[in-house]
Length: 159
Image (tube, rainbow, N blue to C red; front, top):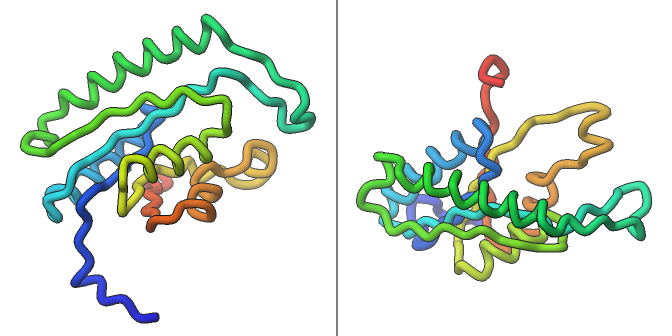
């Protein structure tokens, strides 16, 4: 199937953030793309309510008050993002997603529920052992998302 990208217009763009420099770069791409297409922008951040140990998925630790604190911090960070001057004129919807699922599941569900026709996210570009142990949220999102995913990676010297 050939798709003429010149005729592709996005109406709703979702961008994932963990408030890192990688995510800020992805947000800049999402803002420019939203302005180019006249699209609404949904900013998604995931707060996990429990930690599951990858070595033994039956081992789960509820975060309780700590998750509540993380959500409050995320709300403050989201406020900082919403104050960015380059978002002026955009329709922006912030989402703090509380979940017991893996972040990639919550991001895909959040973007789908927002009606996103493009999901933008940063990549930490971990390789080797870190990638094996931690996995790649971006990679999992690319495999599971029903919409196109734009993964923005920082240049080597920007890390």
